[in-house]
Amino acid sequence: MSDPKKLTPASLAALLCARICHDLVSPVSALGAAIEVLDDPDNLDMRDDALDLIRSSSKAAAAKLQFLRLAFGAGGSAPGVIGTAALKGLVEGVYGEAKADLVWKVAPDGLDKPSARLLLNLTMLAYQAVPRGGSVTIGATDQGGVTRLQFICEGPKARLEDAVAIALSGKAPEQGWDGRTVQPFYTGMIAREAKGRVDAQAYPDDPRVEFSALIPGAASAHAPSVEL
Image (cartoon, rainbow, N blue to C red; front, side):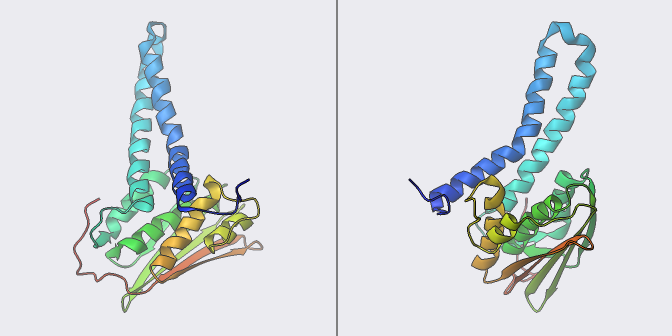
C-alpha cells in the first residue's frame, strides 16, 4: 500500500490538476446547465435568465483560468516582471465579489514571477481563511531587491487550519495529501525554490490570520514586463 504522506512528482502534478479542475467545475457546470435550458423549447420563458447565467459563468471561468494560469503555471518561460496592476486585476476578477473585502496595499509597480505567483497563491489561502467574510489586506514592498508580502485576514470566523499551516511549511499533513492541502504546500515550494520563506500565524482572540513571505534577489524593476 502506498504511503498517503509521500508526495511524489507525479502525485503533486495530479493533485494540482485536481485542484484546478475543482476550481473550474462550478462556472463550467453552470454554463452547461444554461445551454441545456436554451436547447429545451419548453423553457423559452427562461431564455433571458439562461443568457445572463452564460455571461456571468463564462466571465467567472475566464477569470479563474487567467488567475490559475499564473498561480500554478510558469506564466511563460522567460524571466520578467508582472505589473501589479495586472495582478490586482487577476485578484479582483476572482475575488471581487467575495464575502471578504479586498484592501490592496502593493507598493511596487511590478513583481518578479516567483513573487507574483506567491502573491496569487497566498491570496487563495487568505480568502479561505475568512470564509464568513471580513477583509483581506494584501501588502507588498520591495527594498534592495527583496520582496516582502503580507496578508492580513480579518473576519468573524477567521481561522488557520492546522493542515494548511503544516503543508505550507513543507511537511505532510496527518491525513495525507489532497487537493486542499497540496495548494499550500505548492505555495511554500515557490518561496523555498526562490530561496525565500513563507509563514502563517493565527490570532484567534482577534480573530485574525496573517500570512507573510520574503523573496530575496527579486528581479529588477527594469526587467522586461510580461504580458498575461
